[in-house]
Amino acid sequence: NKAVMTLGAVAPRLLSNLVKLIHERKPEAYLCLICLVNLSYLDDAVRVVFQFVPHDYENSSRNYKNNGSDSALKNPKSLLRVIESLLLYTLPPQDHHSAESETLRWSVTLLRLLSTLESNTSVIAVTQIPHRVVSYLKQTTLPSMSWTSHSIEDSSLHLVYNMARWPGCKGMLSSLGVIEVVDKILCESGVGGVYEFRASVIKCCLES
Image (tube, rainbow, N blue to C red; front, side):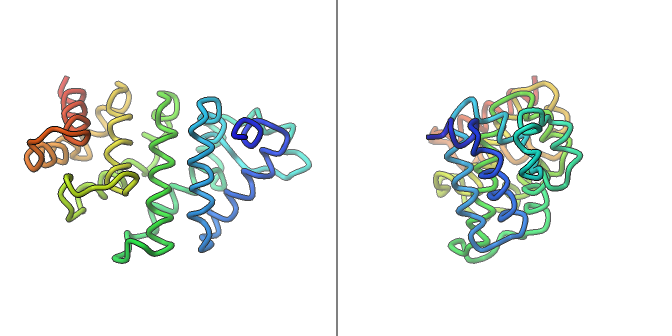
């Protein structure tokens, strides 16, 4: 059960092993990310997963609940920094079914789920993550009507949507050219749907 896996005694070892495999860019990294995505559907797990920093196992039970956003930002082995590094140094591959592509896709999906809390989005805003996800939206050659659930484009737009609702993120998103991105979506859409709705909300938030 999700609560046991993220909040129970086994959580530090489980999360540490998952983050370690992602950090090492193992071919199975995308499976670890899928596991974290599923765990993050538990509301109580969102903050825990987002702030997770691996510790030595003998110290993990003592320090596990004391991790905070500041630790996640300062520690290059934290889940947050590991995913940021992955996004920065992995270009979207041409093969959308490769392990590398799946790793990127599920990384952004995980960030989308973890960005439901304002405290988390304010931390994401001071990393390079917004730059990368906005670049995915700018560089995609697929029209929004062709995007699929949990695709890089779908999760990138949803992440921007989550961030745009909080005042502390508005200036940063505007500086990245997000309004131009959503204007393009609104122009090519015109038939309603979830992407047009999210683009409209983002535009309204950033221009208010």
